[in-house]
Length: 154
Image 1 (cartoon, rainbow, N blue to C red):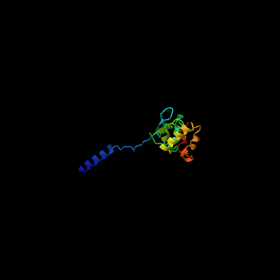
Image 2 (cartoon, rainbow, N blue to C red; image 1 turned 180 degrees about the vertical axis):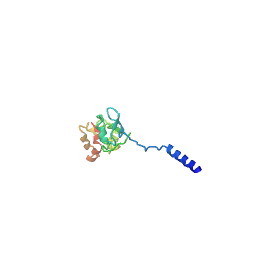
Image 3 (cartoon, helix red, strand yellow; image 1 turned 120 degrees about the horizontal axis):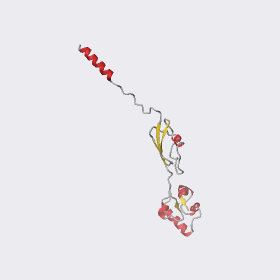
Image 4 (cartoon, one colour; image 1 turned 60 degrees about the vertical axis):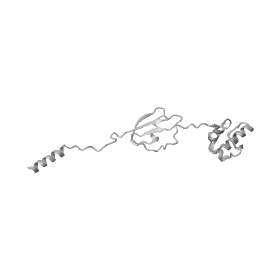
């Protein structure tokens, strides 16, 4: 009798149990990708699974000052990823005709002594007519000028 009662209890217990379904994190086969930064309208896109950054960029309108150089366009994105499009960094130019000693000293390869030589040169000879005229300043050669030429203006 006990055996029948025990068997019935186990049978009722087993038939009343429900087993959870395996977790299906993407049952509808779509991903949500949020895009912000240097684009016209930050948005969340619905995409096919595992899009690349390049595929996402084809669906948004970039601003003129967006900087894609830091992005690997072949990077694969995942569900609920956030893609930030960076802006180009604006680095102010240093005027070789009016920059102070401190301004000139911020240039890579220029120390205080060379910065003072630039100021002395423009004071004694006159304003620089072109950036390459810096080669006339003692202590500045082609290699040194190449280090900071893109940061200069007249």
